[in-house]
Image (tube, rainbow, N blue to C red; front, side, top):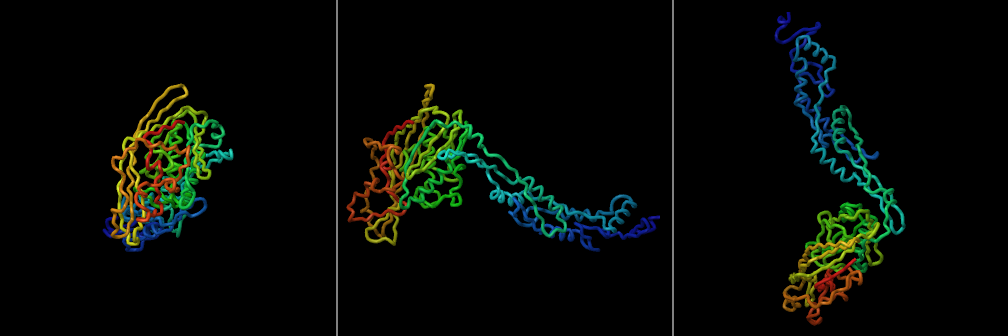
Length: 511
């Protein structure tokens, strides 16, 4: 009976249906495919409309990111949708195919767009959003001056996996919508230290302490504010037994948004104006305190030149985020850091249950390295005016010995070596200036023996580098009569202190 119908048509339930590429009435993504339309091209049109739909991601009741489904990584397999549309009514027996044709005619055959998510593309947008919106937990802290506890705050983060799943599900359900909104799934996590934990701490003993001094006058005022800011961030930090602490993580980025100002700092061996100058003094003072507190020093680098505010071997340079100071508490009890500035003094104390160890510091200069000179001609200068862009400072190789004496009488010691490269002396001179008139460089074989040992910084009042030129006169600057050459320090260039210029060959400190 059916063979009589011919190759171009078949009959079922009393209806005739043409042998078309796609059965009449078949829909793709809710829209009926026009007669004679190419299913792949039609699926492409529907996919384009879907991917162009606006999406807004919401967090805390506000929109934090807007874009399109396509920009968020949604992809559509239109070839698969077209193939499914073409297969409707083509498989199975005659009655089954006739039933499919009837369902299509009634508008009940709707082929979906096959949606997937490009996770890499989606994550590139999501990671940028998380960097802005995720918040780290803030541990409870002690205000040691007010004898108060500053309560902790939970951290919150956007759940990336659940967000990706929500984007993909939204794309599948977004049919007909002009715009869609997604509420970002979040998770919270508690901080490391709670208020309840702090109330149980015993901090009656000073485990160790160290002081350095700085200036707030003139161009050092902003540096002083940076020291205040970094000290405040360090103050109240609780270091649990066995815990490792990163100075950079505690202090954060050296940026204006984090409370830091522009000031002079060392960059590639020269003094330049950058944001956060002075933070290294806080790191160095903290390092000295934990050094005498018997802490493990896991990561630390000395400065590129001796510091004016602390002896060589006790300093620590930090550069966010690459150069860090990392320490670990080896004691069986928590230690609280008390960092405070008063006037031009920075004091860092470690407070805990008891003082478990006495620590000695010994430093010996093994080698002195002469510095070199660099001449820069400056057409804006004339006569015999010479600008000192940077004062020369000799380099040093030193040996540091650390001794530990514990309460039970046991002793041990460690040794390490530091190197401070010489700081190039830089003069800016008029064009054609006779450089032979400049002071001679120090003798390369100059010995340090016989120099008096400088007073340790905690027993004197050293300042930030060069803030008091009368207390740090470079002898080379006086080797020529003042009437011959007019030397002028450039901004940020300060004459070295005696501690930088002629450190004692040996130094011993004990806490």
